[in-house]
Image (cartoon, rainbow, N blue to C red; front, side, top):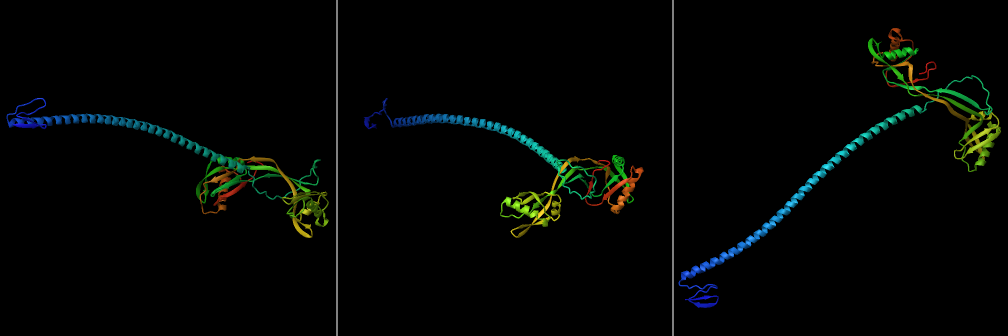
Length: 386
């Protein structure tokens, strides 16, 4: 039997690179081929297995590296998370401290604002006390005495001295009454007792006697000096002439006897206000002119009317402020509404508080206010200073 192996013919022999076999039968050849093929496949599988093992080892190494990297990242994330929590807690603590400080500052600001409001209210009250805004009443005057003028005084001037004691207002609410007694002790005892039961329109009513606390009052001396030789002139026409020329025209105008004028000593002219002060040499001239209140002023045949009024110098002296309680007056509160009119209620109150058995005495004045807030005025008591 002739066999071919790797392109060569060998009769009766099977060639192997290391071993030569003698083949006697086909079964042996088949078995040998089967073993050879299986050996080749086994070796291939082993090689592939080794390759797979190497690949698995490489993959396992990469997986471990990846797991290590992931572990590192997880640890880093955990550290960063803890750091964030710590920072958040720090921020929250700082925010809480800042909020507490802000609240404390707000309380301080509110306290300062309240204090400022109280101070402003106090300043307003003091300002009201210092503010003089009362009309002086008209008084009938009589001559008391004469005094010799000082050497430096002008004998022609009229000098006046007024002792002024401003009336003090006191607000009285509706259903309240003011009672003034002749004796101070009576009012003080009634205030000290406090509560009084008074029969008003056959109804026993509980009234309370309160002290009358007054606002700030003032007293002062008003000194006035009225010149008999000078006059004020206003509403002088605005003419396109110099000030010196205007002074000359005023002097000539008030020198004329037919206007009641006389010899002029001096003219003081103020151009911006268009006013002037004119001084005469003789007394009595100024009095005649100011009685007219207006005088004609001639210029180039045109007549203007100017206003004239006396020159008055005034100043205050011995200015004093005072406050206190009206010692002879009480304020009654708690009066209920009844059908009787104000006068009847006043009579009932007066009768009650005139009786010594009720602790009363002689009533000098009484006033009951049934409706609306009214204002009562107090003045300095010449005998008993309130």
